[in-house]
Length: 124
Image 1 (cartoon, rainbow, N blue to C red):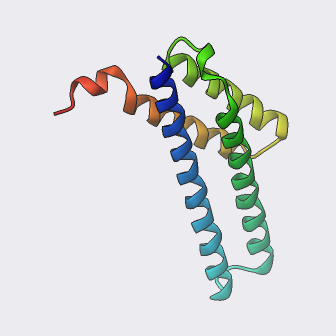
Image 2 (image 1 turned 180 degrees about the vertical axis):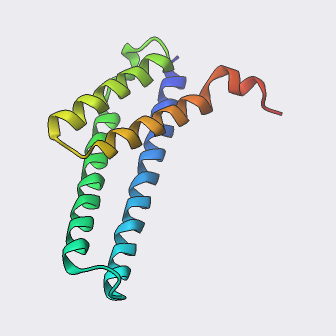
């Protein structure tokens, strides 16, 4: 189980890094839209602040993923459930945007689906 747990956590972390890169692309797009006079300074500031808050929240959650003791879980389903519970609590406690929870949940489901035993049976 230890190897599956580490694999799950590593894949989840890669997915979190991917979210951060996507959000940073949105921040860059916001800047370009501002430079092209497509949005006002106020909209630019609000969008940028909101997106940066999402990045910071996901980075904090990644730090939590990095230090969690995976050996206490019986299987990847338990790890997924624990990460899901921690993400809900994390977003609520820190008053982060609800979008952060939705993104974390989607990535957890993606990783779980990817490594599920049912998925591996259908591999060529």
